[in-house]
Image (cartoon, rainbow, N blue to C red; front, side, top):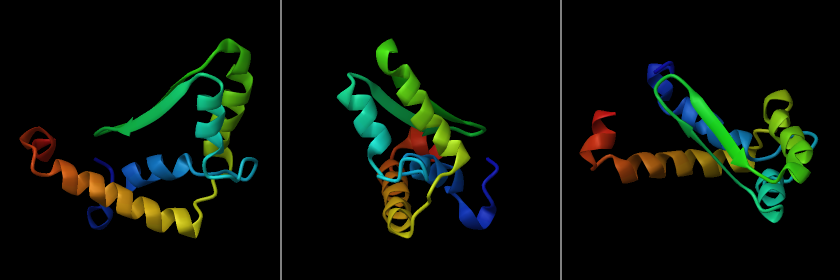
Length: 106
């Protein structure tokens, strides 16, 4: 609910972009590969007033997962190629959900 009127979806876009590479881990799939290759899962969602990130992983790999996750907020890359792709992804999600009353009211 804090997105500028002329840039609706900005928080959702930022949520997507944070998963896609950091200075320390520049591969745009590094975080997800690390989590899943070590038996875990991860996701996020953006609601009216907050964005929630979550993951599940064995304690044997928590240090690497937390290091990768923390880099989202330290030095995210926001690359041009990922920007174009994720603008389209966020728009697609919006258009997919628009016909559904529950999402349209939300």
